[in-house]
Image 1 (cartoon, helix red, strand yellow):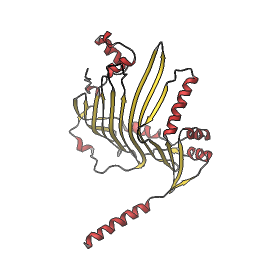
Image 2 (tube, helix red, strand yellow; image 1 turned 90 degrees about the vertical axis):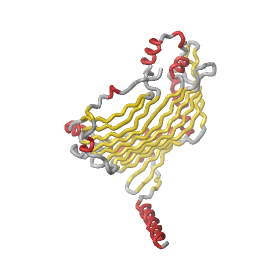
Image 3 (cartoon, one colour; image 1 turned 30 degrees about the horizontal axis):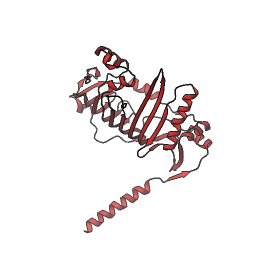
Image 4 (cartoon, helix red, strand yellow; image 1 turned 30 degrees about the vertical axis):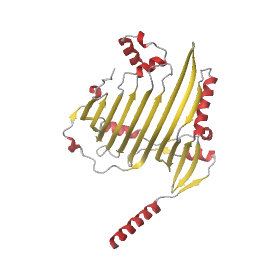
Length: 348
């Protein structure tokens, strides 16, 4: 029992010390001009001395409702995935880029029939060749479901890909390597990554505040800008876009948005002299109805539901994962990264 309490005290003290080590987030009040001046002093610099990390995940569902007088039905798009990238770009000889992907999408329903119905085309009057040509012209000749799970290691310019790709039920395992950039190309690329200033004016800030909320903070020696979009601002932005379309004599649709769940859209930027971290998150559950006069007696009506949960984090002072393989660990990889061999067997 004494050992247990000693362990518990150790854990609590450790948590306390970690929390004490984190800089406190303090809100500060700045004028629009001060925000613009501060933002314009920031540079985007990637010199390779620090590890760049990017982590992102997405959970998206979009449903397009079929017309009541149509037998085609609804179309459902589902996309889920996680992507992470870590890059150590200090020197070419020691450069290492690691990417891991676990993502998939699927389209359910009669997409071709839905498009034909939407455009007022009688599918029964088309030959199979006409349909194929139309789908190719509309860039719709792609797999209706696909997934990729894999890892990519780029070591001193050589990419090693270990992935499993499935398209329309056809599975392909890839374990290949190939040089993707030389030392000369690496050095030329690094030279192009000189610091660039972000030009932001007071008018830019005022325009931003018309569609979003902005809060400014001090976090230790760093500054933190948080931009959030409320559902009221979101709807106002859409209405403004519709009004702008009317100014150009374009056909502006009747638009209605219904919020069926949480709405949370945020972007934050942490910086000192250079940007250190960028985070974005979006969570929403919307129902959208719109109607548009297309001219020629054709009226377009559509109902859409969107459920989305998205997160993104870009860190310019990240860390490489531990235990990554070396080039000599991947001698069994075959040469060549020509992805023309990927299957495209879309279900007709």
